[in-house]
Image (cartoon, rainbow, N blue to C red):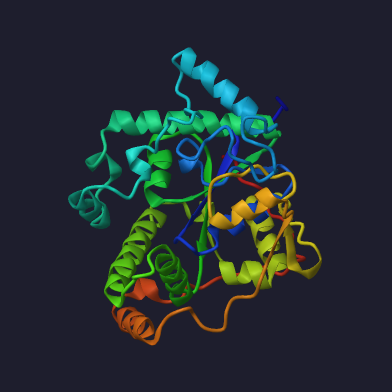
Amino acid sequence: MASGAASPTLIYILGLPFSGTTLFAAAMGNSDGVVNCGEISFVEKDFMPWKRCSCGARLAECGFWAPLRAEAARDRAAEKPALALEPEAGPHPLDTRMLPWHAHLRLFLGRPLDAVFPEAELRDYAARHARFIRAAARQAGALFVVDASKSPRRLEALLRHGDLPIWVVVVSRQPDHAFGALLKRARRRDPSHWLIKAPWHLAAMVYHLRCMDRLRRTLPPDRVIELSYESLVTRPGAVEATLSHWLGTPVCFKVEAENALPMRGQHVYTGSRWLARLDAGAPTVTLRPPLAKPELTPAEARLFAAARRLIPALKPRPERLLPPEAPLRPRSAP
């Protein structure tokens, strides 16, 4: 393995589903000293030896994932905490949506994870994932590991029960556009999608925002930053400068002509379905400007407008971007 930091910094991407978190993580993964591992919460669930990595190789033969799988197998044989990168592995209950309604209610009301999951289970979860993150940093020779899992529950477990330094990037998107993207996916999955389902999706969105905001208030101000999907696709240079200043190290997305974001050399197999296009050899993803209007039917738009008047979390969030020539600030110790 390549030599990397003994204690890498985890850059955790927090955000709503369909808010550009996968694209944001991919952009950060192009920077020197940074490795993007996609949605690490699902590396066990989605691992299949014959599945292809975004680099084009099958996972069993990938120069990044195959060594990590072998190391995890050795650690598990030695009864050390490690992820199971095997086809039969499933997601941890922490990473599923299928919690009992009363568990969701307690989390929505601000109860800690320890009120829902046993503390020993959370400690084991954090230890196994921290070991994987350190191994991924060594394998890539990286100082930073990007986790695009989005989940507030996962982040809380890593913060409360892990020992990794964690810096959090909150990726926001115009809330009505995020709602439209969510419903578009729901219609694609279920052609019989009716308006009656839209309130449930909106309630899930509010729940996620509530959990995100509650967790953000517990983080040191210098360890969390909020950036938008819209800025990433329209002003990537300003986003690079802001992240560079925040992290104290140069960040470069390496955007090519015609706003093409290269994916060459990255090793990701979890996340949005557009990653599957890379299996066919597409080496880049185009940063397209946001749509002028959200993809909502008139009835869905009225529903969202009524909810936004009552729920402040559904209003657009402020953002402060630095000019591309902004100097780096000295990086604070983990």
